[in-house]
Length: 98
Length: 98
DNA sequence: CATTTGTATAATTATTTACTTATATAATAT
DNA sequence: ATATTATATAAGTAAATAATTATACAAATG
Image (spheres, each protein chain N blue to C red):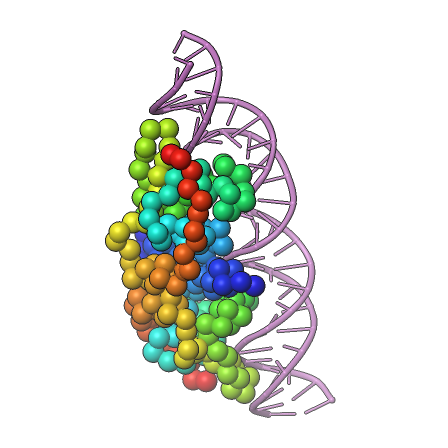
């Protein structure tokens, strides 16, 4: 995959309202996967699939915590992805007890 | 359309290899539509449709020159779009005589 | 005015996308 | 071991995408 195709893939990963919202939730730090269902108002499998796309693009990182999966932004982002994250307004989430 | 949806729309406009190549061609300045067919190696209508998407997202600007259409980057871009443009390597095009 | 030339639109098609519901997997608790 | 709970995967579907070919439009030329 050349540079342009790689860029296109990463940009495709963030060119969706639900995935941008996931990133906006993660600006404050690590979030449990279960908390995203209420924010996006889509089914649990749909959330899981969207998180997978961000993860495969290298934009977010997963951390297993017992039965749960916690997600956070990758600390190193290409500048054009970082610029997108910077632009997003933080979304406050109601944390579950996990 | 809220902020996130607007962002998603603009990002979707640039999350395609052919459209990123169009932007890479425009980094040096205005280009005639006819020159893009050879660069992308797709049909003329396909080029026209891709240019339309970038134009509708406000990323490029069109200027009629007789029978021709010239395109250039919009001078004002949101920072996250500018960061993408900055990242692109310029593509040199063979200019037609229009 | 008719022809040529550059571009846009229409119609079609194959592929991708983003959900859904149903089911499987994995870790914890009983 | 069984049940519970969080997450992932599978299968299916509707909508969007990105190309194609055919056709229309618009400006310049003879």
